[in-house]
Picture 1 (cartoon, rainbow, N blue to C red):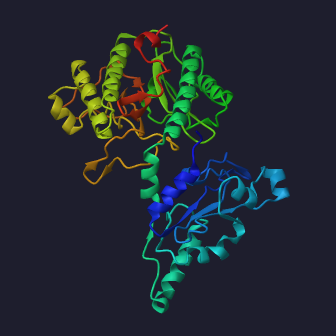
Picture 2: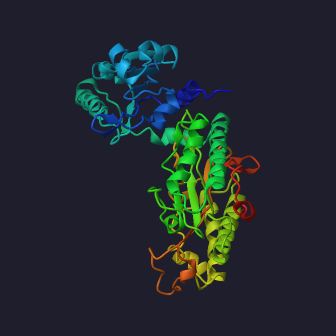
Picture 3: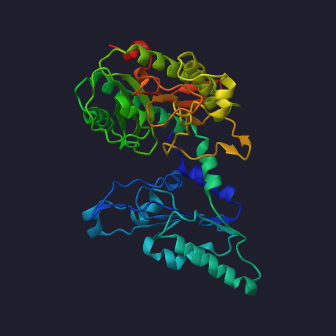
Length: 436
C-alpha cells in the first residue's frame, strides 16, 4: 500500500485545533557561482505533501474546512523548464498532490493574510525559512494591530514541530517497509565494499564502490556523506576526506547508507580488517564492540527507552575495557564519572526515517520516551583508541599496541510488538564473516 500523504494531512489538521500552519518547502541552495547543490526537499514538507519542488509553501487551514490544504507552487514556465526541468504547476498541485486550491508562488504575499484570517493561531517554524518568515510575521503583526478594534486576534505564534515530529517518530507500516528497503540496499553495498577492499587501494575507491551500488539500485544516492576510514582515520567520528591509502594490517570503518526516491534512509556501519585477518588487539576490541551491540539490540522492545539501550552498551563496553586494562576502577564508578569517554564519546544510536538523524524527542523533561512498535532507531556502539583525547588522571595511559584502532558496528532496528527487527541484518558482522 502506498504511503498516504492525505491521511497524514488530516491527522495534522486535527491536531492543530484551529491554528493555521504554514509549512515551506526547501529552497534550492547555491553550491558555487551559478551552480546549485542537488535539491533535497524539506522532510516536514515532504511528509505532508509528497511535492518535490523547491520554494513551494503549504498552508493547513482547519478553520477553512472547504479548503483546508492550499499549495503555493512555482508556476508553469516553458523557459524555466528548459533550463531547470519539469514543473507540476497549479493544476498538477491539485490533480496529482491533492491540494484543495493551488496558486502560483508569486501570489503568496498577497493571499496569505486572507488565508490566515480567522485562525486561532499561526503555526510556523521561526528561524529556518528566510524567504517566508517575513511574510508570516507581517501577517501576525497586522492581526495583532487590528486586535483592539476587532476584539480578537490569533492567540499564539507557535512551532508545528511538536505535532509533526511526534507523528514522524511513530512510523506507519509502509514507512518501516521503505526503511527496510533502504537498509537492504545499504547492506548490499557494504558487502560489495568489503569484498572489494584490499591493501594499497584508496579510501576513495571503496567509497565509489558503495555509492555506485546505491545509484545502480535506483536510489537518490548516499543518505549522508559516506565515511570510509582506514586505520587511525576511523578514530575521527565524522571523517569524510576519504582520500587516504589503505594499509596492510589496518582496519577499515565504513559508515554509509542510501536514500530512496522518497527520502527514507539506511544508516549502517561495519568495520573489518583490510587484509582479511584481525590482529590480536583488533580482534579483542571488535569482539567487545560486537558484544555490546548485541546486548544493546536485545534491549530494544516496547516499553524500554533509547536511554536503556545506550546504558546497556556502555556497561558492556566499560566492563570489557577494564578486563583489557584500558580502564581501571569500579564499574559503576567509571560509568557514573564518564571515565570511558576518551574511548567512547558518542551515544549508542538515534532515530532513523526521512532524516538520517530523524526527528522526535528522546525525553520530555526527566521522562524518557518509551519505545513503541513502529519506531526505528540505530544501535551503534564503538571504540576509538587514539591520542586525541587524553585519559582522565586516574586512568591508565594507552599502550601503543592499541592506538589507531577505531571500531563501530551500526544496525538499523525497528521496534516490533515482540521486540526488535534488525532491518540491516544482510550486512554481515560476525568475526568469521569479517575475515577472509
